Amino acid sequence: MGSDLLAGALDPVWESLVEEAPPLAVAMRGSRDGIREVRDGVAALGVVAIPDGEEIPGDLQAIPIAFQAALVVVNAENPISEVSTAELAELFGDSGRRVPILWDQAGLEGAWARRAVTRFGVRRGGTDLSLELFRTRVLGGGRLDPDMRMLEGQEGVVEAVAREVSAIGIIPGQPGDARVRALSIRGTDDEFAHAPSVDGIYYGDYPLRLPYYMIFRREEQARMGAVLRALLGDFASNRLEAAGWFPAPENERRDRAFILSLDD
Image (cartoon, rainbow, N blue to C red):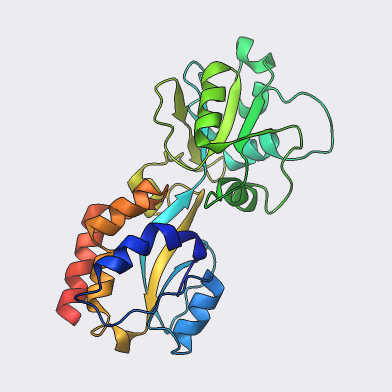
């Protein structure tokens, strides 16, 4: 059981386990159903999203395997390097006022201060939750400014930001384009800013993330050991990364797999 968003990425992992795992009946219907059915003993294992700040059920074992994130990107010529979530709310939130948003609202000075900000995001579709994640973590569930321009896919946003020096965008993954770079983000004005690196996302320093955990009851660990270790393996990690997730760092995955093998 688990998040339906992960179904396509993990299907090859389930198929690879036919020979060594117990017979698998896989149903990826959503995280809430996954948590409930693992707790009730209907399912032996779940791969579910549990947002930061929500309690992980104490009667279940939970191991993070992947993350979705919202990255804030600017043109490489923009002098800004970091921004707070409060400043992001000023830049992207719906204030109800139809006035130009300027870069001084993110702390830039001089000629840049009076430049208008052009904002881009990925139109919702498929497994991309970057805008929804941004709305939840930055705007408290509030509305994005309706003047923000929505484009098809991350590539569209990256290209738009690369072409417009005063642009800013929200995307789900690393831009992969030297003309565009991701900003470091501070949770508050008093905190250190953290870049959206693999480690920064995994350890929770970067604030715009959504963790996905594999969850199971302790008594199922030995029976499901092959499945648990497969989800921590390189094949699953590569599949998740190719589908747009940020997998857990290799050292963390290997440590968790080693501990599971000792406990079997």
